[in-house]
Amino acid sequence: MMNNQRGFTLAESLVVLSIFMILSLITTISLKPQQAVLEEAAFFTQLKADLYYAQNYAISHQHEVSVVFIPSGYEYSMFLRTEIPPIVERTYSNNIYLTKGTLPLYFKFLPDGNVNKFGSFVIHTQKNDYVMTVLIGKGRFYVTEQ
Image 1 (cartoon, one colour):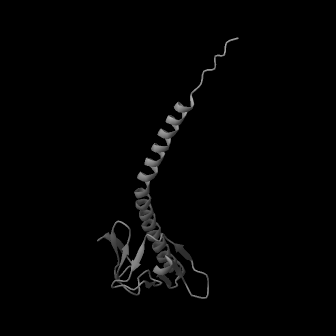
Image 2 (cartoon, rainbow, N blue to C red):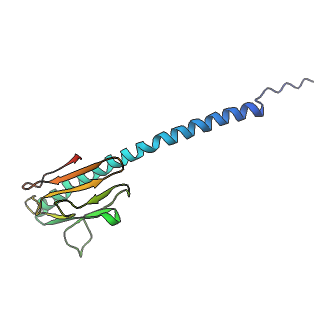
């Protein structure tokens, strides 16, 4: 009776496993900076969509919609009145921080779609600083890299 068991030795299995672990570690480390970039892009996309929604809500329902940013809680909300639940309430990453500029972190969309205050505030991320500017008339806004 021949004992012909063909398989991998312990040493060969350990070499393959260690190569796999090294490749996994390199991939994980290289994806970490990409997470910050995606997090930043997702924040701006969501913020713009929420601001457009609040503006459209104000026009369609003929009510003032307040927009309030709370940097210490990493959140913002949009509401009609403080005693009723907000129409939009979002939290965002603690890697993003907002600071007041010429515009306080509180403004309103009026029933005609305009804003009651105009100016800009600064959005700090891990990689860059951005300025969000709210223009007078028609409630337009845009974000630029500083």
